[in-house]
Length: 219
Image (tube, rainbow, N blue to C red; front, side, top):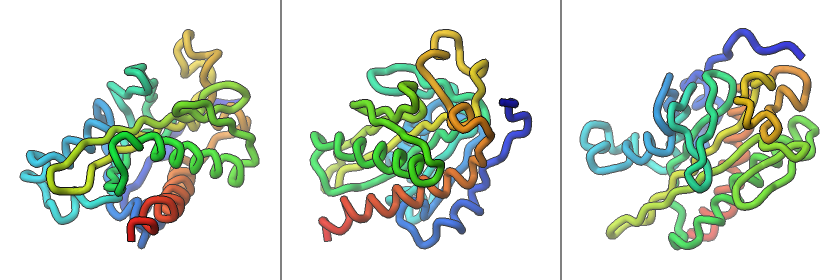
């Protein structure tokens, strides 16, 4: 399998247009680089972040923030998530589900099931869910989810769902200590994957299933 030499860029306006009128993806931001997409979303959603932005658009539920590269991406239990520039999908979603803080695991299951469904139906792969928050192919990690919730005074709790999907890495793109544990879609399929199209498919499925599980029951 040849490595992917040309980076296919994520284009926020095109993503948003393809997803409209979805809840998840009603606003999309693509950063060239950030420490952690979860931290970036939490900063935007904080009172200080709202003060320097347009609160009517920035802090709405459904904001999706992508980063082409994370310098401090993290996974479960503080583990580092390798986020090579332009080779994967690294993004976080701002949500306000009507659930208790102790029920954040429901969001994790929703996200990993939605990702798995896209891999199964869109690519004819056989993903497996490894609890608490991983999606695997052939026993190796291809995607992970990190949910962080924050209590809000006199408001629905805020949740940030961070998602990382290995898309176009080759084996040599992973550090030696991860080469037996990690895999990308390109490695599994033996061909590169269009990240923009994958992002749309994943966000569409996340939106549909989130509305089914968390929005309808609250109405």
